[in-house]
Length: 266
Ligand SMILES: Nc1ncnc2c1ncn2[C@@H]1O[C@H](COP(=O)(O)OP(=O)(O)OP(=O)(O)O)[C@@H](O)[C@H]1O
Ligand SMILES: [Mg+2]
Image 1: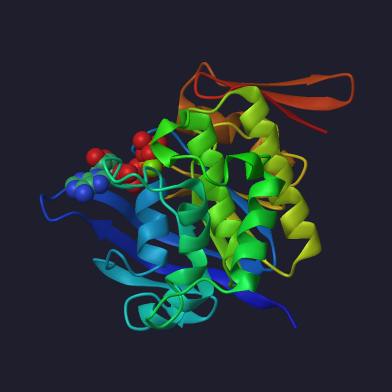
Image 2 (image 1 turned 120 degrees about the horizontal axis):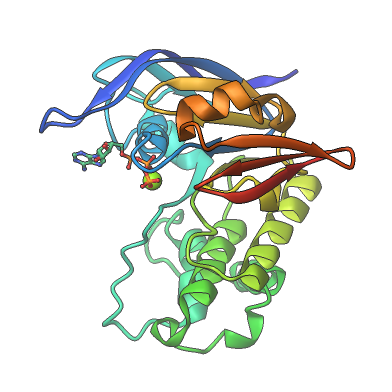
């Protein structure tokens, strides 16, 4: 039986200073899926994720994640979700090693004393292998490049447990090779495990062949559907302005926005 991944009803979120980040948000997406959330800067993507896991409260309306109300049942959601925030505040003055980061995702779900078991270490190492970072096991995290750090943070999420993986712009600040490794690791992981993935991205191009649902946001839902349905000229110009174009060439659909460079969809 298929379950609801996300279900929003009349959701709005206003920050205390008065900024309305989301209004009239209504949509539902079934699990399991690989879902992308796209939209320009400030369109409420991160706000939506934070509200969905109970880090922010709705001003009006509701959002349910895997059937749990995010405002009232966030503890249950937290147990099911692995969340990679947009900018992780890992204290870089602490000489923490790559293995500690990769293990953290598993250890934080344990009761104290949080001691890594053989299984924890195996899963952490396997996750690092997926993003080609296993050789950095004993390396200080703060001596890695930005792209390498992103790969370790993705590995931390992959090593942990739970039916939903949420990643807020995991490809930001990464080069093509890191992007390829991260995207490939997520695709494999999604195919091999009964896990849903929600990923915020500015560029649909690296993931359009693997995502099933795309949510196009601009403070409210502008479009929701398969990649080819969302790659629609009218929808994209509403979000990205008149410069957005969808081009059909050689049997492929390309979408060009100032945000994304070139997005192709088969
Ligand atoms: N902590 C905060 N306090 C007040 N306003 C905020 C806060 N965080 C975000 N906002 C505002 O809410 C709106 C949506 O922000 P959000 O971070 O959700 O956008 P986003 O789509 O994730 O953008 P980006 O692509 O830059 O990550 C923006 O106008 C932003 O200025
Ligand atoms: Mg954001």
